[in-house]
Length: 190
Length: 237
Image 1 (cartoon, rainbow over the protein chains, first blue to last red):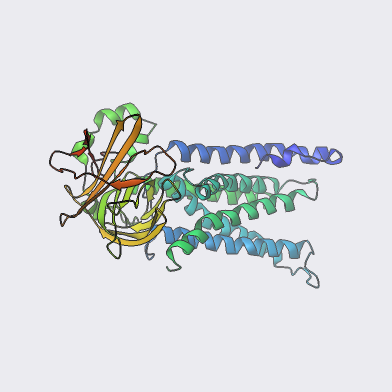
Image 2: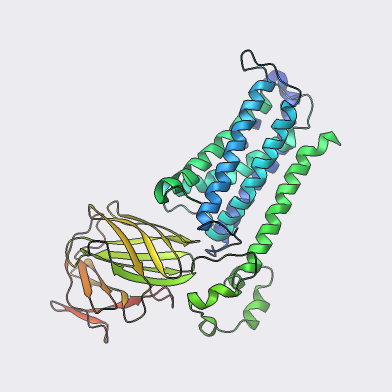
């Protein structure tokens, strides 16, 4: 999942791609740590919660939905920054929008993950749950990789878009296997 | 400075995660985290009173949480009642995040479920595409269950012994026989028995009557010994 990028460096960009090795290893370590914790720690069934919602499932579903909305802003602002949206030139604030939407999305996702790992654990009793567990760990690994390689200079041009796309795709799949399923099963309410 | 902002983002997220994790640990009833606190297993095991003495009923445990935690669901609970329309009974037991459920109409429609219960959400699956999803709190469990090709909605309340769920298994002529009974507080008792519980789609018939006081039922020449499945005590989990 997160180590895939370092396995396929184009030979011409070997020195640039080599800079990915350490971030990818750290990212893999993050994902593994979360997964092992979620597997070994016996789920408590309860965790800290936010008042004002009808159940913790709804808190998580809305937080995850918020994170996904900000992640969509991420993709749109990235497309604008890379000049991929026809007839739209990047405004000066687009970088700020991209950075802050990403930070907010990440910080919204953290409480959801803590709740998942502490109260529910890494589970595999159904396909949806297994996919969600794997992707949940992978997301934070992939996000770590993205954050670690952002400041690096001289990377091949494809790296950031690819890593960003992986992070976004995993987050959307996470949302689909949890919040979407939750709303579809129990209804949309607060 | 600018070069480091992604790292600051990461560390902020990690710090937030750690704070929430610690807050969750502090807000969890002390009984639960003692078992997995790997940092001091020996000392905590030595000072911990025996599990039986600290068993708290779900309803009395709820208000004593620390301020930020809103505990809306019990850690241990038993529910039993009739599905909507009254054509079948359902019993659900929850014990430390795990759940066992049984749906039964006293004849061919029945299914056992296993799954996880956390924060008021119950997700369970059984053989032959049986599945159950529900939300639960200290008073009731509400949801949908699919058993033996039939969909039921239910909203049932808390059960206290002797009402609740009973299960018996026995080896009869090389086949595993598995019986389940649901006893309701009004005395209603339904049970079904699977003649080959290990098959992928077990078929069931009406179970022999369960004597709740002795926990036995006579199935032909076999005496079935039933165990109560109880989330409150952990029996059957």
